[in-house]
Amino acid sequence: MYLLLGAHPHGAALQELTQAGGPQPANPEPRIIAREDLAAVVRRLENDRKGGQPPRWIWHRTQDWYPGLLASGVELERCYDLTLCGNILAFSQFTAHTEYARTADRTPAEDPVLPPKTLLPPRPPADQGALFDEPDTAPTPRHTPAELRTEYAAQQAALAAVGPEGNQRNRLQLLLAAESAAAMIAAEMQHAGVPWREDLHEKILADHLGPRPPLGHRPARLEALAAELRNLLNAPALNPDSPQDLIRALHRNGIEVKSTRKWELRESGHPAIEPLLEYKKLSRLHTANGWAWLDAWVAGGRFRPEYVVGGVVSGRWASRGGGALQIPRQVRGAVHADPGHKLIVADASQLEPRVLVALAQDSVMAEAARDQDLYAAIAAKGFGGDRAKAKMALLGAMYGATSGEAGRLMPQLARTYPRAVDFVERAARTGETGGTVTTRLGRSSPPPSERWFHSQRSTTAEEQRRAETIARSRGRFTRNFVVQGSAADWAACWLAELRRRLRGLRADGTPGAELVFFLHDEVMVHAPVERVAACTKAIEDAANAAKELLFGRIPVEFPVSMAVVDSYDHAK
DNA sequence: GTTCGTGGCGCG
DNA sequence: AAAGCGCGCCACGAAC
Image: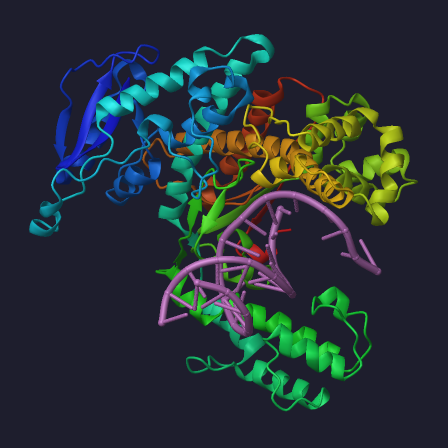
């Protein structure tokens, strides 16, 4: 059963579709549901399960509906996010020949997520005066069931037009399902929150920085270091937070650095360098994850960031608020399981190189990828057992290193693994010449920038050199895009499969395990101790399922390393 | 006054 | 030792 959930001034407008492919409404007139009844109605429809399957909820954006439903205690099984799926279909090479992609708005959006094309123009309010007369009235509905149906039909038509070759239609369909599931998971994780012990966080801050300072003041430890720096650098008014101020003071003391980056500062043996690096480290803790951060982002023992699915062109998630995807190691001790619970921290080991092996079908590298430690296996084969070298070479190949040690190692890597290296090289050439590359499941890179097109028309030698720089930069982007993006495809399937299994575990109604955090190739599950074993199995099974969904049965392992801990800082 | 670009650094 | 991908956030300081 497919249910369209559209906006309506009174709450929502609901319409049932007779079948997936034929988007004909079962009820010609949408059912209007008052805002206060919505959660109850949705819950009833979700549990109705005609034919065993729960409905698939089709809506403009998961973020518009699902957080409110979760707040009312309603969890849903599946949805179709028209915005996220429309964005994929508008750009995918698999659908490039379709009407949908041809007429899509290709202007780079301010918003990372493009609205689907048929939903684009927000209609002006019918009556401007009403805004003032009835300030509590909901805004004019922008997406009626009819509009949603039109958009859904357009997207399904685009999908149906994908040829069967290379299994492209199935892959794209899988990506749309995984992306929609990801949108639900993001909302659910925000709803659940990361278990965060404020007392432990405050202890970390006090240990490093001293007691909490009055508003607008430096903590004691930072103030002391600043005083020491002013003294050592003979700069009584120095503000170490100002790079300009700082670099002038360093120069006056004969420390000839071009920037204040820490790797450059470490070169100098001046006695001021050590306290300066210490200052920078602690200052970072204070400003990024200090008391102000705690006040702003942690409440009721949970950290609740907003995740932005589709926020990165490669398909990775972004986040808004609280720097959720950059929780520094320093404060991970504050992430702590509730009594009677454990944190299961699972990490897909060396995901990107393994994805590269599978993409390139490099059977020689696949041998190394059957090993738990892929880098060590590669080192044994071509780098005289030097694991660090092997790792640097492989990362360099995926990132497009040209100089330095990584650059020098490239020929060595190419000799042993020509297929894998050739795969990323081809992606780079495609990008340099303005082409598009595509992930395993069909997410394509955006078209070249204005700057790239403009540079193509260069005439002078100087302009041509700049054009080459711009082209190489895009080559590095597309080179990395295929690997990072396909890894994101894998991770989305992993998450969706894991979510399904965790839902199964709590189907009996007992309190279950919750997905509480996701970071590119890592998930965190907060589970009652008696559920830990079932959860670790679910995580493993989900990883295997993701591999098969993407690549079928291939002789490449995607091992998951897991830690069952009370505290996040004990993982890894 | 606010907005925006930059340098720096955290994460993968 | 320090280059090569993707992000978000902070403080600063110039531009508006």
